[in-house]
Image (cartoon, rainbow, N blue to C red):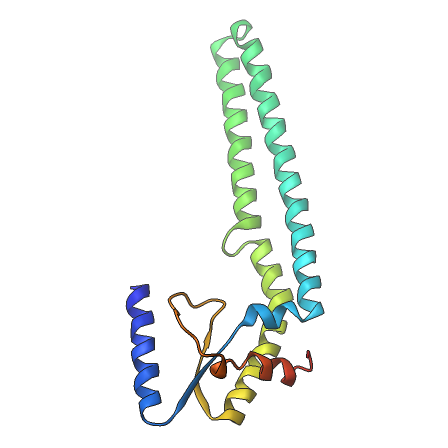
Length: 170
């Protein structure tokens, strides 16, 4: 499906070019790497991610210790005590998995924080790309940082320097 979409995009791009309209490309990785706020936001996200990973690892260690202790005491416990300990371990494992999902899942804390920190910067860059497109009469712009399948790109079509100039990052 993804290949069909890319092929369709190329067919559209080439047919549009055939009627004297233009297409270009930008490299958003290059643009974003020049924005200090973007680097700061990524560092902040990385620190937060490390902090959460450490918390999860500590919780997993507690569960592992509980399991190890259970294994050493298992022979001395009656069936009711064994079942209670096993249930306790299982409940804690589930709680850690849920916490992991709440933090690192698609709509988790990290995703929300990432959107909060990075979307304003991406919107700022998108506005500059839109302005460059209007100024140059470009009707289709590809992002070579995210679009796979581009096997050739003429540097004349690279609008990245113009966007950087628009953002005053040259």
